[in-house]
Image (tube, rainbow, N blue to C red; front, side, top):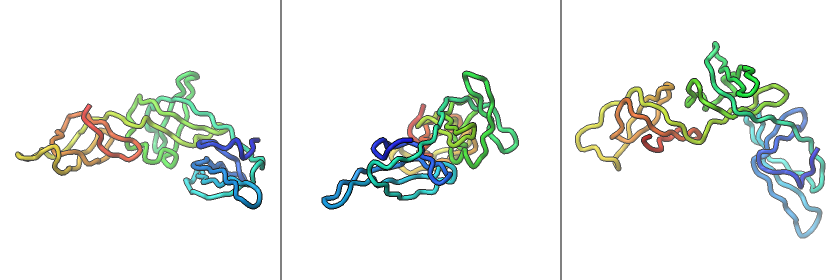
Length: 185
């Protein structure tokens, strides 16, 4: 249990049998009446966002979320199999939990997995990953780095927009949060 004074971004609360992560919080002390805490909560499993207000000093139930670095091993049917680096325990993670992170995942890559009572909640990759371009059209004579962009297929099969001077076989740095091209590697 924690009070509303202990709320911080990333804290996971157990409200009404669901797990909610604190995205934003603001302590408000109006001129009249008691203080309160205005929060924006995100459902850990469904991703639904909810605004909720708590009176100051109210106790809220926190959930214990274990975050560990795990190595991606292989795709088993539809599930992504990760291995804990310390215990060598393997856990399958469904595509719904993987979300957009699956577009940037390679075998052997390390990801931060959040679990609650053995159930995987979320997968976080580093902010940027280096991936190889497996297919893109060649740039035309006169194309410049400040010009437009063209589609390029990454080794994971995901398609991103890259500058015209990028060629097939080059390695590029990609932002895992937005899917945007950052630079050559």
